[in-house]
Image (cartoon, rainbow, N blue to C red; front, side):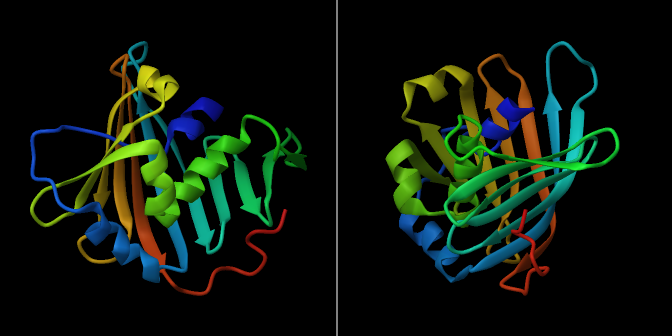
Length: 200
């Protein structure tokens, strides 16, 4: 599950399409200060005929505050705030267990999520080749520059909402042909977030 989360946000797909200036697309996101949304992630793997489905909530607040919370089938969350990353889990009695993972490998998952949710072009451009697909500039393609990511990710595509400044869907195709599709719904932009949502 941690690996799924880590690569949840590394994004790329098909190449023969219209290419636009990335700045024009990323510049839209400069006005976004907060995001709240529901998400559903479907992971299709070769060994199973049915996809593994998980769902939850995501909260983002500039600068660098993120809560990615799974509500089903297992309840847990990553919280990135105040330069710290925490993993929140629950035992069989639903008792909360909090782990500081700031300096651990798992913290990269929250870093990637922060990067893509905020759509920070400067940081993304350092790690990925960027292409904008379709004439109405509603689809972003990122090709990983890092050799280790190239070995895992084949291609990913980010679909932007036509109604609001938000990511609507992410499709990730892995080298072994496994696939993850993350869909966002009930997206709220620049609205007041629930109190203490970034507390642990």
